[in-house]
Image (cartoon, rainbow, N blue to C red):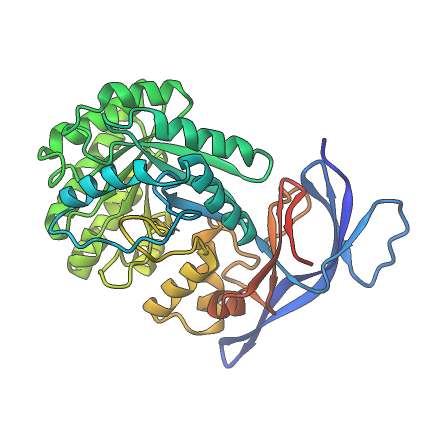
Length: 406
C-alpha cells in the first residue's frame, strides 16, 4: 500500500547559467512533488498553494537528486558492528583468502547482523539499490548467502537488490560449479568469478564455465578482474567474445578491470569499442593507490560505467564507509573534473546514468511518472553535492520515506 503525500519546497535543478561559453552556475527552483503509488504524480511550483487533503512533508529547500545505486559491495565480508580489526599484511591473494576464512567464523556478530549494519548505512546515505557479491566456497557452503538473504529481507521495502554468486577462492580452484547452481536456484541473479588467470589458472576454462552457468541459470555475469596490463585486457577480450556468442549483451559486468588503466590510451580506446559492442559494464571502486579504468574515456565511447564502494571495513581493508557520494567526489577529483558541468555530470556514475540536467542543460529529471526514488541533500546543486559531499537528509524509495533526519 503506497501512501499519497506532497513533498513540499523541494529544490530542483532547472538549467545551467552559461558565461563565455562555459557553464558557470546551476539554476534551481523550488517545487512541490506529489508522490502517489510509488511514483512522482505531479510537479508544481512551490509558489502554488496546495488546497487538497494530502499530507505535506516540508523538505525545507533541500536539493533532490536521483537516489544512488551501489554496484559493488560485499555484505557478507564487512566487519561493521563488530570489534576493531586492522588488516594483516600478506604476500598474495591466497594468504588473504586463508585469513578471511579463519577470521569470519570467530566474530561475535553474525553475517546477517553485520550485513544489516551496512545496509542501514547505505539507506541513510541515499542508496536505494545494491548489488552484493556473496562468497561461496566449500568451508562456508551456502551459509553466507542464506544470512545475506535474511538481511535483505529485513530491508524489504527500503531498497532493492541483486546478488552475485561469488566463488572468491576460485571457480575452478574450488570446484564451485555445483554450489553456484544451488545459489542460482535460491534466487541469485548473477554468476561471479575472480581473476581467471591468477586465481583459477586457466582463462579459457574459467570464462567458459562462468558463461555456461549464466546461460543455464538465465543469469548475468559479474567478474572480479584485478589482473593487470595485457593479461587483464586479454581476459576482457575473450569475455566479450563469449558474451556475444552466448547472447548475454547487457547482462555482463567486469568489476575493477585494472588492466584498462595500465595499458596505453590507444589500447584503452580499442578495448572500449570491444566492451561497448558486447554491452559490458565496467564497475570501479576508484582506488587511491592503484591505476583504474579511464572512466571519462570509457563513457565517451559509450561503455556503461558505474561506481561501487567494494571493501567496507573487512579483512581486506580497514577503510570504507559505504558513501557513494564521497566515492563519486573521489572520481571527480582524481579525474581532474573540477568545473560546474563536469562535477554535475559525475553524478550519473552512482545513479544508473540519471542526472537532473542533460548535457545541453535541459531538465530531464524528475518527470511526472518517474519512480519516486530520490535523496534530499543539503547542497545548492549536484556539482556542490559531489565536490563537498553534501549531507543526506532523507531517502525515498518507491514513494516511501525510508530515512529522514529533517
